[in-house]
Amino acid sequence: MKIESLIKEKKVRTIAAHDTVEYLLKCLNSFNVGALVVSADGKVIDGIVSERDVVRSLSGKAEKIGDLHVRDIMTVEVFTCKPEASVAEIMAMMTEKRIRHVPVVDEKGELLSIVSIGDVVKHHLSEISLENQTLKEYLSTAR
Image (cartoon, rainbow, N blue to C red; front, side):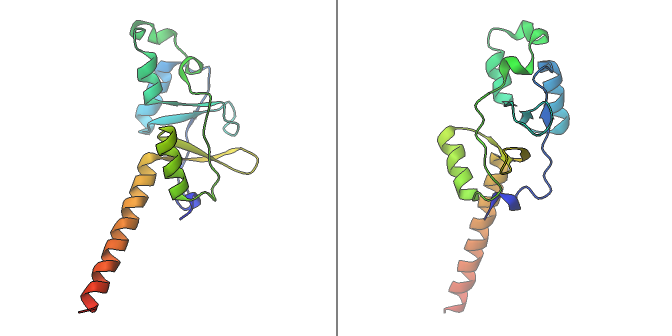
């Protein structure tokens, strides 16, 4: 299955690099997401910032949270995929790179959506369940 089937109605949330970490935390909470794509215009990807980035950045600096901006903690090297990529390819990339969110981009590299590890796992479990059911039905008719 292709990634495009997972992102049909999925909205991607972005944040600007100059926004504060305090604002980032409010956005993560209110949107109920684990990461936001950092983009000034909603198309060009400047980075990605996740809950993990927040936790790592606060080690020894918790008292300075009011002074931190997204640009101070975001991940600049962003791994992306195209809508035509297979779910299996993205699962492998997430495992290899130890990442939980992959922005989906078009042929020009402009942001279309985002896929999370939760999306991928949900799809994988669905496939396994369907395969299991099919095998059970096959075995029950083979007797």
